[in-house]
Image (cartoon, rainbow over all chains, first blue to last red; front, side, top):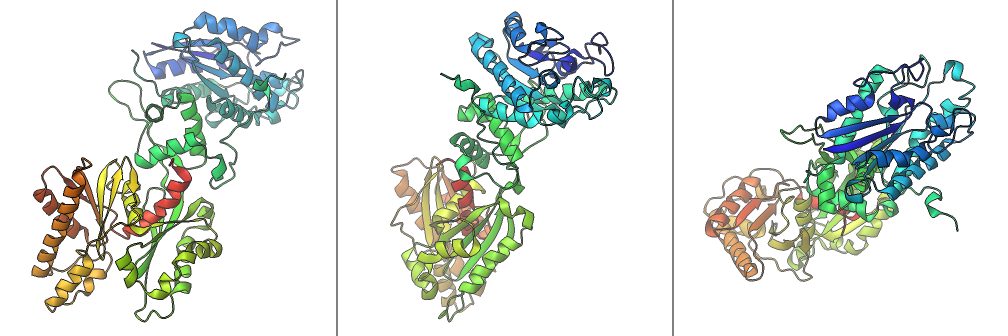
Amino acid sequence: MRSVLCYGDSNTHGQVPGGTPLDRYGPSERWPGVMASELGVGWHVIEEGLSGRTTVRDDPIEGAHKNGRTYLRPCLQSHAVLDLVIIMLGTNDLKARFNQPASEVAMAMGCLVYDIKELKPGPGGSVPEIMIVSPPPMLDDIKEWRSIFAGAPEKSRQLALEFEIIADSLEVHFFDAGSVVTCDPLDGFHINGQAHASLGRALAREVEAIGWPDER
Amino acid sequence: MPDMRFAPPNPLRIADRASGLNAVSVRGYNERLVLSLLLQSKDITRLEIGERTGLSAQTVSVIVRSLEQEGLIAKGEAQRGRVGPPTVPISLNPEGAYSVGISVGHRQVEVVLVDFVGSIRSHAVLPFSDAAQDTNHPQFMGAIAKAIADLPRHLHPRIAGIGLALPGDEVELELTPRAARDRFDALQEEVEREIGYPVYVQNDITAAAGGESMFGVAKHLSDYLFFYLGARLHSRLVLNHQIYNAAAAVSFDVGILRLEEEIRKTGSSPSELWERGADWPSFGDAETAWQRHLVEQMKSSIAALKQFVPITSVVLSSYAPQAVCKAICRELEQAMPGIRAMAGNIERSPKAVGAAGLPFSSRFMVE
């Protein structure tokens, strides 16, 4: 049995577009659930999606617990042994309160990769496979969120390239979620049920393509 | 001291996404390792690439993704096996790179343009005129320019270069028009200057062997004895994918020149012999006798070599019709149990196609 940790924000949590963090798609509808059924019995898929999670930043408004870096260590240790860690974050870092360009968000992704490499929660204390997933770009119309996310849609379109540069530099797997799904026009930055299904299937193929030797 | 982990990222591979091929300097050893593997085998998975190169899954993932973005490789459809996860085969993208190959023979020049898997996209033959007082140089340059012009303009940045196969055999050189021969030393520089692509030069027989190894019947063979049946019979030894190119390789007078002589003796016309891509008519006893001589010579070469190297595979390449090559292979196999003889499957212009493989091996493969 192999274990994969899906580390993300509201789009991993399965928040319904236009809803609140309590409006959530069902376990089998969210992308980690779809991916689990696509991968089949050989895989244990762990969901770790928190609405508002950033890469490395304490959120002065929503709270320090939104910091993806401080929670990553206990999370990795709780769920070890892990064969693969998939990280899809970045959108919340684009909030106006953080005032960050896309390249800084990518640097922060790099931090998380280093933390995983340092902690080595893989089989036998090894570094697990790591996959950076760039989130689908935000739509231009983000409704009542336009002040909170001022300037973010433009930056969100740069994340895929910036993340890929980091993934290449650190030699980890990379997938651009924007290549298979778009955000729902209801709020402009969450993905709907159909997108969860497409993303789950696409990521299952990416996971398989890594190539996994037979387990001893 | 600054923590260098957080210095600006330094991606080596996605440097240039605009178009065309990445500069040679950024194609690192690991990337060449992966491309070499793909040039040798079709439809392999990332897992197999990792196992055969010793690279980590993450490194393979990064390299494969960047080669895919560059258009050099393509993913196939996922294959679902009865056990285990589906596998995604990876192959070279035929449209990913192109190359021009030129071979200069003693009767004619051949120019081909091939794609990344060795399929001929353009082909031209330029005979030397009998009264070769002057050279056919302008036509020669014209044929190269035309091979390139035959490829749509937007694909020109995908041309890896030009391979030039020149004869080294003393006897065949003597037969080559003097005016053409005199230009050989300057040819690389002239073509490079006039056509504007890097030119790689190799001995023509070695190039033909390289062509069969890269694109042809020898793709999966690591060790074999290569015969080239041209005007004379030539050979090269290939061990661990490496072609041994002796400085003073010998050739034998059992080739097509000899057959021509035998046919002349019977009073028939041998003109069909030198045509490319046409079947030969039966030349009767003259051909049978020639074939016997040829096989005898091949047998003695193999026997001599077998004292030192346990060779079991033989490849016979030629522009002679494949039916003729296959008949020779059959006879050789009958005469030498334990030897597997295969006719090369680059039928048209094996030397020029082999030459076209040179820019690929120089730019994409490990030494």
